[in-house]
Length: 97
Image 1 (cartoon, rainbow, N blue to C red):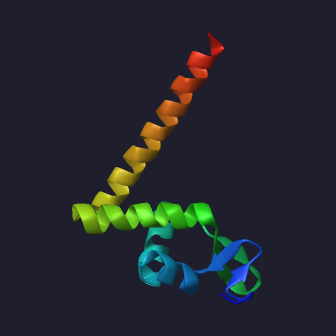
Image 2 (cartoon, rainbow, N blue to C red):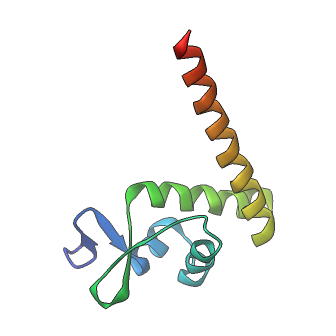
């Protein structure tokens, strides 16, 4: 991977698409739905970090392995996010005891 493909720990959209096995249009659609956020730099170039790659891979698995359509992926991803938030809150409450 060249330095141009990876900028300060972040990957360009085209590289991310190849790494996670999703077309750039699908990644942009997930971004519009608020399921993933890119960082932008001069020239409006989208950049994604390692956490974003992991999340995109999880979204891809929801679609491919479970056969969910885009709306289903969005619903399940949001439910998983809510579940993780509740787990975090529960840990914090237990730690206060």
